[in-house]
Amino acid sequence: CNADKILKDYDLIIDGLADWQDKLVIGDECMRLSKPLVHVAIAGFNFHLYAMLPGKSACLRCLFTQVGIEDFPTTKVHNVSFSPIEGMAGTLQASEAIKIIAHVGITPADEYIHFDGLRREFHTERGFRPTPDCPDCGRYAARS
Image (cartoon, rainbow, N blue to C red):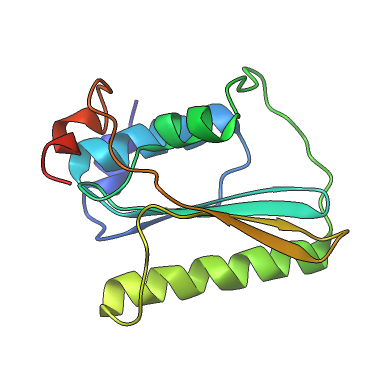
C-alpha cells in the first residue's frame, strides 16, 4: 500500500474517494499517521460528513460500526449521485477542512452529520470517541 507515502507530507486529508475499501485504508493511515481526515460519502440524494481528528474522535471503522454501516462493499460501487448534493457535501467538507487548518470555529471531533436531500433534513449524531479495544483509534482512548 502506498497510502503512507502519499499522505505523510500533508497536514490534513480530504476524502473524495468513491470506493469504500479505499476510504477505510485512508482512514486507517490517517489515524496511524495522526493526520486529520475530513470524510464524506455521497449516494443519490444523501451524504454524510465526518471530521476524524486522531486523539479526539473514533476512527472511520469504529464510526461506521456505531452508526450501523458494517457491511462495506468489497467491490467498487457505482453510486448515482445528484450534482447539487455533491456540491453541498463538497462545500461542507471544504468548510470543515479550512476550520481545522486555520484553527477557527468549532470542529467537533465526535459528530457525524447526515443529510437527506429528499427530505431536506440534516441529522447530527454525537459521541464518537476513540474506542479502547480498537487497533486504530484505541491508542488514543485513554487520552480523550
